[in-house]
Length: 412
Image 1 (cartoon, helix red, strand yellow):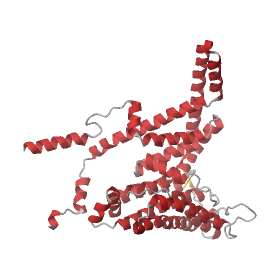
Image 2: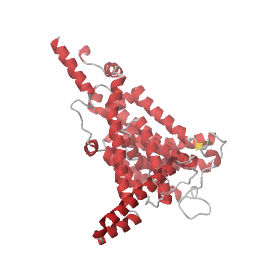
Image 3: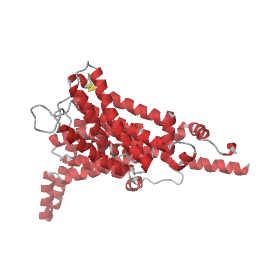
Image 4: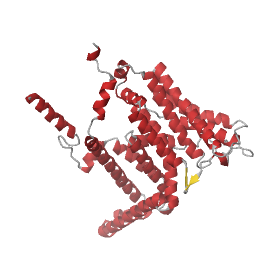
């Protein structure tokens, strides 16, 4: 009887023996579709930039008011449109990677996006939709900031204790979602939304206390963290950037090389089958959400201690929800999340250059980000617009190989 029921361990070698070339071929359609999505989003963004430019609007007004001079005004529309798009995207590139300070700003904005995105991506792999990164980051900021401005510890130790406090508080906040999911079946989307609001009002509650209030200020903000508790700068970059890359490497190892990661992927694929195979689905849910919170806590320390900001209810900004976008664009993989975080960090940093140099409204950058997600979520639409036709066995070469193997076996 026992020999008739394969264990999960018996399945692992078959997965590991899969040829690497096949893995590479399976990634190519994803890379192609993602690149096309980004290009299409930039093209739509170019159209929006053009029609919002004052010179283009004036030329269009002349085109409709004096149709007889069609070719004159049409030429003006094209020339002004091309100039507006060129100036805007040139300013975007310059603001993102055009100088050492621009590249530093891009990486600083990318690091918290990468860490928070890893937390969302990890939950995705376990079949959980973690939209509670904002609440986890707020609670992490409260704990991290309190240690940062209250205690007087030696350099290095103070930073480690502050970061550990922020990560631990965020992990507990995320673990609450896992416990509710495991013990009561409460949907993580509902609980994370509620905990986001609870986290915000918790921060406001403590900021009203004297121990958290900045001396001499009537605003709800804390004192800045002590100098000993801030990330050191190495070659112009604070330590949070290599930490984000190490976090991505750690998530990859967890998912691909650890038993817990195997259980996460199994539960994400089929929780009932995993339970039948003897896995503790409840343990996986709790561990996944706790680790996701841990990563969100690390993300907020990079903002709070990296830029030496004060704790407020707005300290997270849009990073918590942008992390969902980063995880989706990165296909819930560590490498993809890193690349998506760098892209959105570049868009965020370059958007300032577009606003100041080219006069482009900052909301257009958010529109471009939203379009990227829209096109990534609809690969069939992207292929249709780009006229990329899927071959019968194209993008899935293993189908042809499998059919050939089955035919050979039938002949034998």
